[in-house]
Length: 331
Image 1: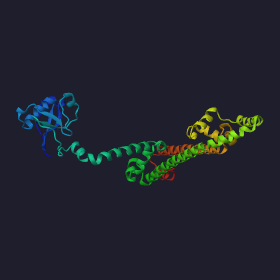
Image 2 (image 1 turned 180 degrees about the vertical axis):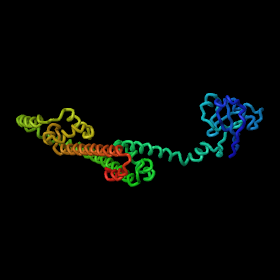
Image 3 (image 1 turned 90 degrees about the horizontal axis):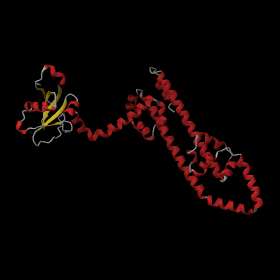
Image 4 (image 1 turned 90 degrees about the vertical axis):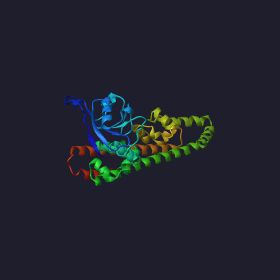
């Protein structure tokens, strides 16, 4: 593409106020370099440089990359230097020309191929930078972000993180393990929810048994009541915890780690009396609380371990043995 510079006709003292621009006609491959102080100055020079008939005045100046009409001096002054303009005369309309040589032909030819790729690439790079700043943030990443980093080619991720391919491969294996653990935890909760629903369906049978036991007489009720109050008085759980255990289908997800520990340490028989449940349902809930507590402790330990690794890496930025350490302690 030929580019020629026209005479600006400006005084030497006005050079600071001039903006260099590139100008061409619609459907033309040849463009000219022009220095103009304002939009009207650029229009005036367009007639002479592009050899346009002045009877077609006024001409319209548009951006070559997308056809945006430029009709405001303030907007013109905000545009960067060497912005490409197309001069339209009469009823001419802007048409894309793949010979522009600027961002227009790049975006136009690659929009269908690169638009989705560039968006995905930008996303995984942002996640990678977050992980590079703090390795312990792996615990806070969403499952979607984890999968994005797993799918990135090892060489590309290694270049972004500034690590070796072996180290990055170990990191991606760790990410896959975290993703698998989350999936297993989700499936376990779903199975537990189904099991609790099955227990609730058996509630009608248990209630009939309780009604039959209540028919033995007032004396028996008094004795049973006294026996039932003794273990209930030994319950160390607050009323809030008992309410959560009764009302929530998966109470272990609603309790704090301290509350979960109290529930797991409680005597199953005493807890069953306090909740008015059968012993099997009580033990099932306690087991679910114990599993959830163990999972939380594992996550905390993993977080501390990853923070320790990240701290050592930041303390020794020039140590070449860091990749080996990261590979040995991915989990």
